[in-house]
Image (tube, rainbow, N blue to C red):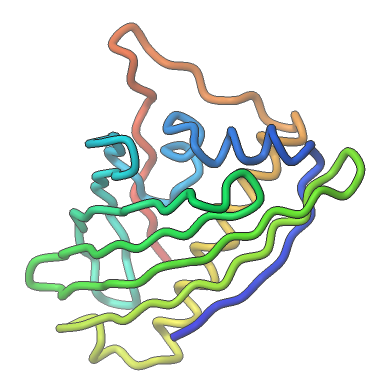
Length: 167
C-alpha cells in the first residue's frame, strides 16, 4: 500500500521541521499514541493502540529517521508488532518546500501489513491509513497555525497520552 499527499502548513519551513522532530507535538498528533520516546539520536520507540475494522491492537515498534537531507527532507522507516493482530512495516519520505511564510509538506508513505491485519483486505487497510494520516496532519496543522495550543509537558516531562483510536 502506498499513500501520497501534500499539504500546506501556515508556518515557516524551519518551524515545521522543528515541530516534526518535537516528541511532545508528535505524541499529541499521532492517533492512538500512548508512548513515544527517543532511544537514540535518530531512533524512536512507540506504543500505539489502533482499531482497524474489527481488529483492535496495541502496537509496539521502532522508527528510524534519516535526516541526511534535513531540513528540507527526511526519511523514516519502521516496524510495529501488534501481537496476535499481526504486524506492519513501512516507511515514508517527507519533503518540505518553503513557500513564503508557509511550508508545503509532501510525503510518500509505504506500508506492508502482515498477519491478521493483512487478512482484512487492502481497501479497509488503505482507508484506515488515510484516515489516520488525515487525523495526524489535521492536528499538526492546527498546532502549527496556532488554532490549538501546543501540548504542555507535565511535571514528569511527559505529555498526556492520547485516547486510543476507534471507528
